[in-house]
Structures are given as C-alpha cells and as structure tokens.
Image (tube, helix red, strand yellow):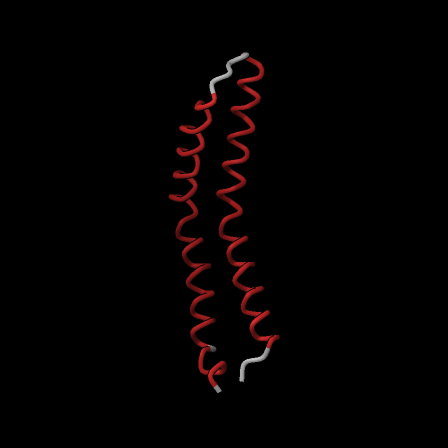
Length: 90
C-alpha cells in the first residue's frame, strides 16, 4: 500500500530532478541576459529585443552540450519510478 510518505518522496525526487536538469539552462540564460543588459546600459542602447537572439543561441548551445546529461538524469528518474511501481500497487 502506498503511503503519504511514498507520495511525498516521489514528488520530492521529481522536483529535485526538474531543478537539477533545468538549472544549467536557466543559469546560462540569466548570465547572457545580464551581460547583454550591462552592454545595453554602457552603450545606452534601449532595444528590448536585443537579448532574445543571444539567449536563444546560448540555450541551444547548452542543450547541445548538456542534453545527453539532462536526458540521462530524467531517464534514471523514470527508471527508478517504474522499477518501484510494483511496490506501490501492493
């Protein structure tokens, strides 16, 4: 029988996996946005759309570099979840 603790443990593991796999992309986007904002401030360029292209390129590059690691993390979580599935049914 599945208990409240089991549900909380699964939810905690899921949230941890989400944070771990999304953090590199979010940090790269944040850093690129900050660099572009500093550049805009220094040069007095007030173009709102200037940050989109560098951010998209940086995130795509990060996905190409880190995509296999991210997929491995998500696959490991799903494998653990489905492996223990029979324990939740009894």
